[in-house]
Length: 455
Ligand code: NAD
Image 1 (cartoon, rainbow, N blue to C red):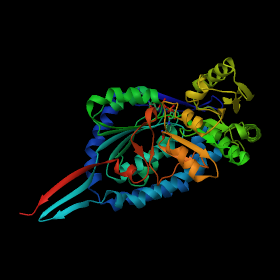
Image 2 (image 1 turned 45 degrees about the horizontal axis):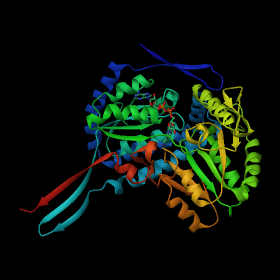
Image 3 (image 1 turned 180 degrees about the horizontal axis):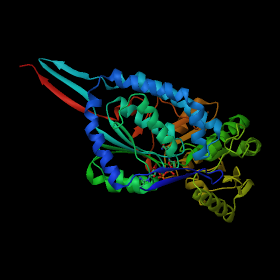
Image 4 (image 1 turned 60 degrees about the vertical axis):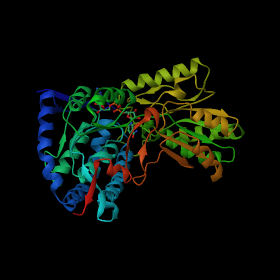
């Protein structure tokens, strides 16, 4: 049997070796899910809700231990691991409350003996190929509404968050979800590819554009419902009427929280020339207060870079920006424990990779702009479109700017924020489809149209 070795990214130590899947075991898991799904879908919603309610209670009971598992395998600072698990609870509550109203059969027409209804039926067996950076959030956004709406789920955690994925499975099974209704699939890209080759009714992917595009290319001709939640290069514009210190403190956190390894991290900042210097000074002040170090330490703010190869990406962006004339204000180098010094550049422009390619690390470029029109043009100069923000006390001005920006989510005087009540989606290379909100429950169902004439 093949195994998957799991290392602690902060120390390099081997922390576990777990049995991994291969093409044959993935195929038999897919068949098992196929036969288990109809009975799960036939249960009253209240019974599926009861399982998810028990799962929520189990997460609460084991929260500290689950946070340690996540931190050990991903390098996420322990406080942020606890934050993620606590944040998950609100999402579960939202799904539990909204599952029934979002999927109730709607009568949309009734007249002269003719009735028209929309019924929401489960997709069937869905595959979820997931990322490591927020494994509970991005996994839970899929498997909780998918299970509530009567689907069976083949869940492949990232190879960098496998122990966390196995913990999810254990807690779901203990909570009463049948073993073959939620099945973890263990391994890396080749196991993801094997999963995608099975007879599935939907594939829900969170990860990089490169992998998402490869999946879309293979899955396209098979007419399987496909959702892709991909990367971003999220911009924020700080207007001349904004308070530079308040904006800087919020944006430094938005850029570097979770060690900058968030899909909606602030990745580019445009600042009006009138307050540029005071903003940059306040930003540096904040960033230099961030403690880099051992992810298990409660006071650590910047933890390990999860995938070692990302350190090369960060080094390359730093070298490219310096070669093209940017000013390195702080950081720009690796530190012990697979960490990267929080890095801030000014004097940047869009010829530099730092301003156009996803960095996925604690690194940011701050560019000076002369007016709102220039800011809008630069914000839209991207192949991505996940989130974008504006800082200004003037709501009308912020709305005018954000109304012109191509992004799935827009922020006024805030950033790096996700709400279960709002749809989470991207434009362009940030993906297709959505999770969260009531649409993110309905997305796991197929609307069936009923035309009913009284005889
Ligand atoms: P990744 O693309 O390297 O891996 C994602 C998943 O795909 C993993 O489970 C991996 O094993 C699997 N995989 C790899 N090759 C495959 C193949 N050929 N076929 C099928 N599956 C395959 O991405 P990652 O490093 O895990 O995640 C980081 C990326 O995810 C960033 O770009 C980030 O912005 C993005 N992300 C987006 C969101 C969002 O909501 N839009 C959320 C979190 C992360």
